[in-house]
Length: 77
Image 1 (cartoon, helix red, strand yellow):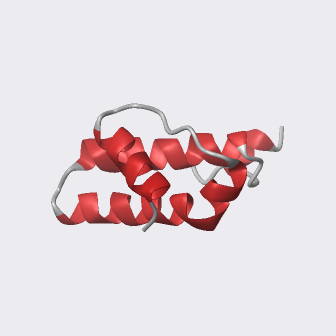
Image 2 (cartoon, one colour):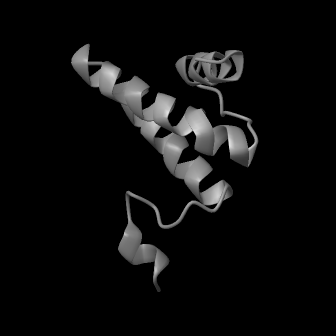
């Protein structure tokens, strides 16, 4: 895990938005955020899980990675 990815996870834990390049996001930050959300499920921390998934959704939209995983039908209208 790179320093940039660690910083991204730390920012999520603090409730702050992640700032990263599209390349860094696609290469490893997105996967790390999803893994972090899954780890939060294991420890029953739903707030951080939802925060991490919301950040994945926001960054997917920001970096143009396709339709939202939360509401794909809404984006087609």
